[in-house]
Each structure stands twice: as C-alpha cells, then as structure tokens.
Image 1 (cartoon, protein in one colour):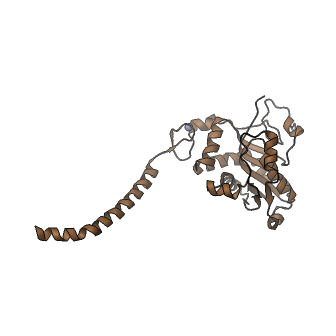
Image 2 (tube, helix red, strand yellow; image 1 turned 60 degrees about the vertical axis):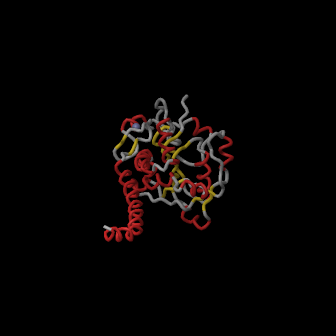
Image 3 (cartoon, protein in one colour; image 1 turned 90 degrees about the vertical axis):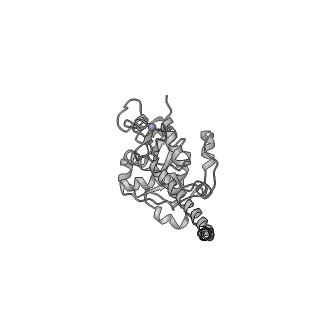
Length: 265
Ligand SMILES: [Zn+2]
C-alpha cells in the first residue's frame, strides 16, 4: 500500500499545476462556449434575436424618414409642398453642408440603438444601421468621392476604443463602393459633450474644433465629401466639420446620419 502511495505523493505537485492550468483553460473555453450559446438580446426590448441586435418588432417601431422631405436638410414634411420647396430651417439658417439625409427620426428606439453602439460596444448593430443609412443616402452617394466619419478626440477614442461613426462609414462604404477616408479630418480640440447645451452654446463649443491635416489638403480639394455621423441634433458638430473641409477647398460637403432630431410642430 505504502509503495503505491509514494508515487502519488511525488506526482501531486505537477498534477496540481496541470489541474490549475487545465482549469484556467476550461474556464476560458466555457466562457467562449457561453458567449456562443447565449442568444443575442435585442438592445431595445431584451428579447432574444437571431443575428443582428434588433428584433423585427423593434425595427418596425423605428420611424424611417421617407419623402416628402426638404431636399436640402432632409427634414420630413407633413404634407408635400411640391418639388424644390425648402424647409424653413434651410432658408432661415442654412448650414455649411449642402444636403443632409437621415435614415430615421431620433426617437426612443433610435436613441437606444445609438447609445448601445456608442457606449455599450454593440458593434453588431452597425451593419443594420449602416445599411439603412446607405439606403437613405442613395442620392448623395451617387456623386460622392469619399466618406469622412466625424472624428473623436484621441482621448475619447482611447477610452471608447472605437469610433461609432467610422464603424457606420465602413458599412456604407461596403454598400456603395465609396471609400472611407478617416484620417483627413481631425478633432484638434477636445470639446464638451453637446448634451444639455443650447443651440448657440453647441455652435460655440465646436467652433474651430476640427481641422484637415495640412498634408492631406490635396486629397480634399475639389472633392465631393459625405460626412458620416450617428446623430444630427442641432447640426453644430457637422457644420463645424463641413467648414473645416470647405476651408480645405472641398467642392461640396453632404451629411449622412443614422438618426436626426425632428421637431414636431
Ligand atoms: Zn426588440
């Protein structure tokens, strides 16, 4: 009996080490298996979904923007005023960008999607959101030379690990064949979050915050550019980006976003 017990004792240490290593591996494998086995939950209603992160019922709740809308700003009209009629906003305070298009109105479901993509690493939402954007921006994409995502300041990009606008631009590029040039535009100044600021404060906050790198100006000159972002609220950020691109002699700047705020009157 003693003779049998001895080798067991001498093997105890390496066995324990192997067991610990094996257990680590098993935990890792188990976690992976769990990730695969757990169904993706709809970001909006938390029901399990196949594949992409929003269930059919929640997609149906989104308010897709369809014609008639202002040909300049893409703001939906309640009734059709006829071709080439501009919205009050386009006449009263025209932005630096030429045209804007959005896939959906920024309502509760849209806000959930945007927040999940931006703050919760739900990159699985980008393909569906980007495809709807490509559809909404079809007219803009036809004549465009490049897509430029609204840049984050490097400090914010570091914290958030990825830029949601760039993720959307990549999907739109795959749909349309228009290439993405993310490096041409930079956020040279960290700005406060626009949330909670008035329209005027928003404009001041982002003034001069964006710049085209001097060595990239030649790529911008004479080009038709589409700025890509997740949301258009007051349009101040996109306007500041458009100004920077126009200063670098872009021929035209349009805007394509997933959701836009539509004031109900
Ligand atoms: Zn849902």
